[in-house]
Length: 258
Image 1 (cartoon, one colour):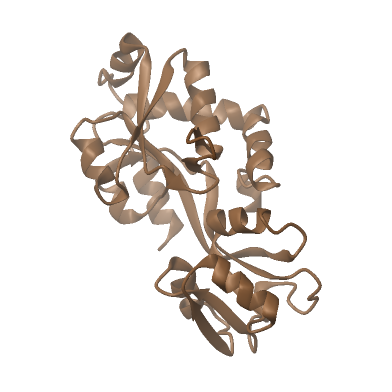
Image 2: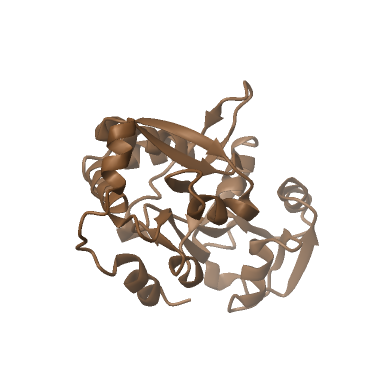
């Protein structure tokens, strides 16, 4: 996809007549947000069954600065856009990738963090320093997952692509030397790496980038813009970078690094 095309859809019509959406939220005193609560490191259930993650913390900070309470509404991912447009909640805050197709049915903020597919190698393996050196490598990915698709489309192509049933299985294969590198979705892969500290190294860059945005109903750009201004302030004062380092060990929210 072309980022320029997405940006035009996301940022079109930045000046709007009041549509009443912010007034409704402010009057209710709460911002109701939909999410699929099974996205590791972004929005998931911790060991006590409580919602945790980068999105949870960031949305909470937005709510605090707007003077409203954030209320979460867990929803199946395959019906989350329909639920938004059906009025079940005010926005989707779920590490949702901004695409041309989605931007035609929802109103996105600008990207607040970069997701996508990344590559990891064994910590002691010094051969792969940049993604362009994948040629000739044996690469692993989860069958049918975005990491597999990204690998199949990446140039230069690795020598062999091995399919695994899960990220942990792929990392086991990497540890055993069955593959030289594993490619998978950034957030769940980082979650898996955190459980095996020191064993693997992330290769700089993205095999495929996926900018994440907050999605609102198309006719509620006033609320979208109010949240956007708050996100801009949170990024500017360093709070967003601090939250990113808390959850990911580095700042994934700086557009200059995307």
